[in-house]
Image (cartoon, rainbow, N blue to C red; front, side, top):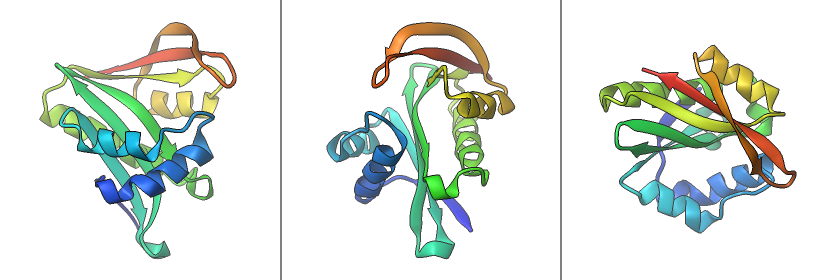
Length: 148
């Protein structure tokens, strides 16, 4: 059973491992702790209770004035395609409604068709392109928005 709970500083080492598995440029454990402790960042983790409470996913979103900016969403490779990313996105949308945000935005690699499709399932729409936004490899970022 997957539980979505607020992240705590003690989750940072596991979140860092997940970042290294998921991204070409992972955030450091210290950077993750800073985000977790920031009053403007909303961070959740997905815990698989059937596997000795293993952290299998996480998401960060900054609350900036009246909108949310989703920074990172990562799911453990062994747990992908099980709906965990959707659970995390739904949690962020719920929080955004409670905080009366006008919308959520994010950037995603243009080659990451699976992630783009996931966000589109949650009614995010492509709104623009950030040229050469990503490195390792250099790639454009697709800007997506969900207006609430």
